[in-house]
Image (cartoon, rainbow, N blue to C red; front, side, top):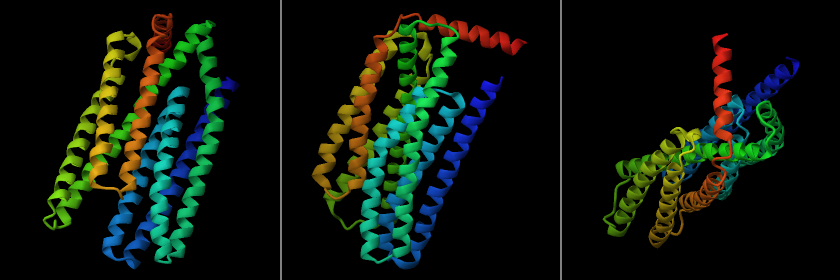
Length: 313
């Protein structure tokens, strides 16, 4: 009982810590956002604000991922959140670096200090999260060891959780795609076009790609949430094909978008991250596919029966 209480308190304290860091990061971003309106011209504000709002959205999605994985105690899902955070951390650095350059040019000392504080907070969060991952892995392995000591089944369990953990990454990518659609919508609604047909075509192509991303990510998430523990091999094959399609789509987007725009590092970084995550997703599915029929399905059925019995009592 004491061990359970200590574990519960440890997880609760970790949720509290992530919540505090989430509030700190987004409060700093909010203060920077307010400061920009008072000092910078509207044209420059719009450019920087898109990057800041992108970082704000990412902070929110990653925070949700951390809280979900801590509540469910899914160690591999927690690791997946760390992986996607690490990838998007590069994007955040890219956006923030561009913002920092703009702020330095405008000599906005307060905003520069706040932005550096955000860097520090994010680096701290990543460091402590990787340290806690080891502890959470031990907790999850101990829970499974009550049902089996078979190393092959435990390994299959970890690979299954890695597969389930892909939900976090693709949820964040879905959020990013929806955000980019909203940005383009606001841009076309409020920024008058100058008759440049090339720019108009570029905008249209970008919207088409983003709509395809939204549909693709929704399908991927649907497949990842549909009876994943039933071990359907066709389901894994379908997932691999869909992610491969998304990978090819993103590569094509990089080529097409690069022909029209070579200055939007924020968007291009998102594309690079999507390519890397698709590659990671295909590796995870491949490994999990080859761990099917290891006896894990039977263990899950036993765990389910025990849970139902406890609920009845």
